[in-house]
Image 1 (tube, rainbow, N blue to C red):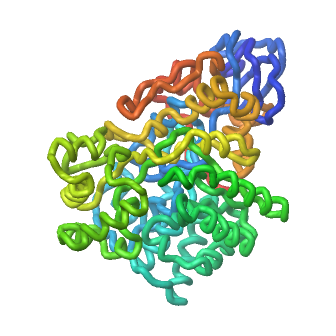
Image 2 (cartoon, rainbow, N blue to C red; image 1 turned 90 degrees about the vertical axis):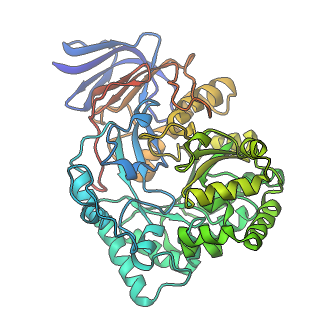
Image 3 (cartoon, rainbow, N blue to C red; image 1 turned 30 degrees about the vertical axis):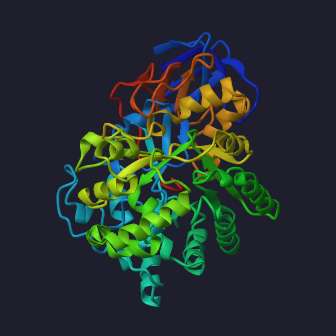
Length: 520
């Protein structure tokens, strides 16, 4: 008897090939047969007549590692069809613990956080046995290696510190991490030289891991940053992924992605192996500190930065830098999401708050950052639709959320809950960026191959039964920057490990996913 039998569906198998009609039989978490007219009893039968059966979607760039033990349901992933996420991105994995992190408190029933998160190995040893709503694989963050060894110091590592970072990196890779991520935009990763990055990347290559990167710049110096990252790939020989590839900040930067995509093509023509990923929104999201505080100042820590921002001279200097950098006197392009000291500001534009206060926009923002001791995040509306489509259409572009899960958070970037359904509705059906089979490939088989998920990404015999059943004529995102949790239309079923985890884009509590380990 089969555990699940999907009848009469149109199969898009993940390879990019044209669709065909067949049934899909599932047993013990595996696809055991894909063919027309499968006979046999099943514990559950789904009639997919008029619907399309695809592999489960793979989020090639996520940040769910921080919630793997605290929010294992991974609700926002499952409810948009994501059955596997590659987390630990942008240089900022949850482990190993930072040198200055001395907070001791329980992590659920798993033990004290000082023990659980001490190294990536200690985390993976625990997390690999925790049932999840959606599968997860992890990278170790270069920035986190630096924090663990050097704190936020703005300097080169000593030989001893470099050796210690390599020990922690090897620990992560030997315990099942899939590679390393750079966050060269963020402190302390931004303080690393290209040579430091290459030296650590060579360790990743020893394990045939993947090297993902939030590059040093995604605006005025995007082309220079791309050149640097490709030099790291060429010197190390690693497979590389440029994270959430885009260009933002000023309109004169729009269009640069056409140049950088050509740079990727040229590197691949030389024999290297480089990809990128993209999310389907014209707003980015990150912490305000990284967007507005000069890089050289970020190493002093949040308490000191809050003091510095109270100084009128420093505040005026930072304001001038940002007005010049972004080309805007107003902050009507900044929507607050995380604001612990002022939860009433979440979901609101900084410009609107400033006008209510009768205050300069930057003064309002700086006051908010001080009140929250720099722990503030926001959406930043500085990108263009044409760049999104250009990147998305590239033959080596994958789809991502660049998000974790919401937990108790009310306001967040809707990419967290709606990226994959938005791609299929807006960019495939409505705008025709590429064909449905090709886009499904970008969401499934391509990231599975890039990161080495050997039994995922295809509707084939013997592969894991991670499956989506969609209505291509109806699928669309409904979440917005004002209503972040609205469920999608046209996502009929999400199946993880052979078990139905969501129906009509609503999670049912099933935890059939797990943490994936490299070379299992």
